[in-house]
Image (cartoon, rainbow, N blue to C red; front, side, top):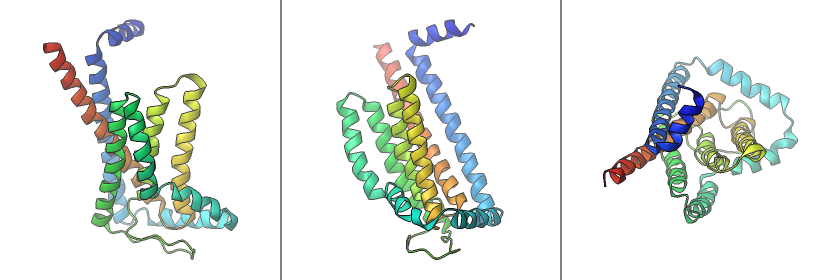
Length: 232
């Protein structure tokens, strides 16, 4: 089948589109879950310890102390209470614009990221790094990073929602901005010395898995509704 014919069929068959989206979401969720499990196993067998410490020490000796105010501002963007405020603004705004699916996905992705990360921290109980002294103090456990998780669960999903409504240069600009913000939040935790790099990566994988699972669930719901509507 030619590409043009395939695209034409997609436009004529919304169920096929939803089905493909569902398959893609489930595949992505499974891949990220397996990635997280593999990383967690390596972390708690001590295989990442040397590299984790080497990267943290390199960041500490390479990036100047006067960046700390900027890093504190960036890391504040990942606080649960701050993201909660943004979610309380963004989700209703999306809903009022008729984007109910997007509003539900953003809410489930963000809230779920907070819950699942807290549960995983309590499960793994990894102590935070203590390689160098800083004035910044972080509480609770280290693995996975809650800031990294919420950066994908909220900012990442919001980026996808906005970018999907845009075209051309505007879409690429939003994607670049969103990716930069997620990476910056993760880096701020390393700069402040309160997370290992493997914590950050685990946070990204956790949020990606949860967002893909949430999207797949919602796509399943849409597919069932479409089938039900067509029967009537």
